[in-house]
Image (cartoon, rainbow, N blue to C red; front, top):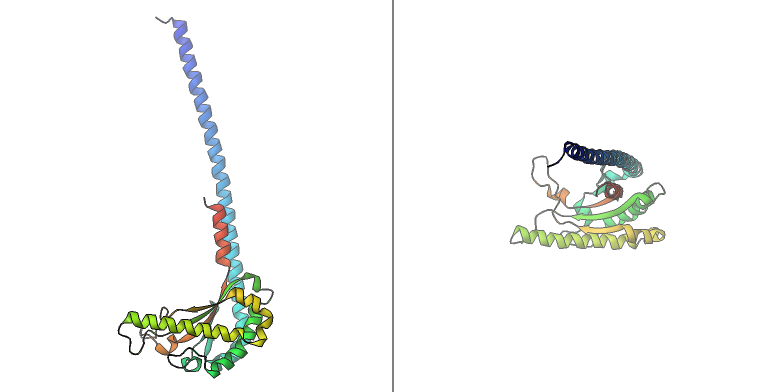
Length: 238
């Protein structure tokens, strides 16, 4: 049997063991607390960066929209065009753009593009914009109909081929313009042709598709704000 002194020593040893464990746990809690504080500070800083980027690119988009509007407002009605605040430049007069079912540019549309595009390019490649542009998209859009199609799927496929051919024709014509020769390397990096068939038709006030307005060509500028925000998120998220 253990003596009273031995029992007391055992109790003291257990107490010392639990004190050491509690000290260790307290230390670990402090470490985790510090890590949490650092992480929260980092998240707040990254959120501020995201906010700053969003504000910067909203300002850039607003300024670019104003510059485009100032340059082209006198021409919009003549061309049957419009500029939207999301930086979409839309040509709406289907009869001016292409013959029905054809992908060759009408002579009138060629004249419009030869006037429009060098001026447009001069604005978007200005020093204050060119480094923040991710893509300049030429988009071809059609209505959902196709004469003689046996199904909606067939009409969609036929219109897809047509819209793609039209944007390629537009791109080829733009690259042939002597006025853009100095910027051809930049254009071949950032200018793309995208046929979208009837994926984004224009709806009228009655909720019915507006076939005439659906058949259009659009130029869209995409900034790299999304890419910058994604990079920030990669830094903060595990």
